[in-house]
Image 1 (cartoon, rainbow, N blue to C red):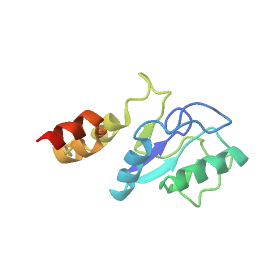
Image 2: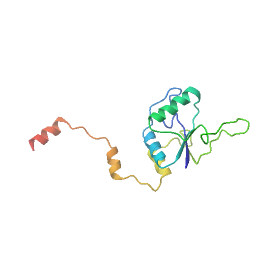
Image 3: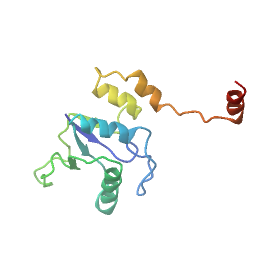
Image 4: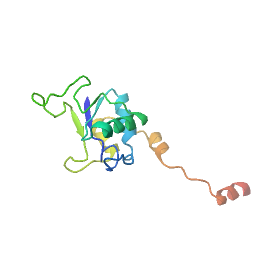
Length: 141
């Protein structure tokens, strides 16, 4: 499936022209979608230096796009004959009606038959640090 993904406000918080902080689980979800052989297209307002920075930021976080601001890698935009609309099956964008759902929900919408495994969910929970009291209780036993 071809999935067009916006950058600012979708993968990272809005800080344009700077790059904002990653939105929780954005890269984990995008990497998983890539492993499932979906074609990811970066579809963003950015251009020039800002676009290059966004692409490199995603690359450093393990996401390589099939195409950038294009329907396919070799596409050359001709304003006279081509539409700016990207040919994609799904668009993920913070500007859609209702806003951007959490990335976990996005993943479930794309993969409704894949239920998270309990052990995977438990691994994602933060682990508690042991306190001095925990060590004392263990020593007393």
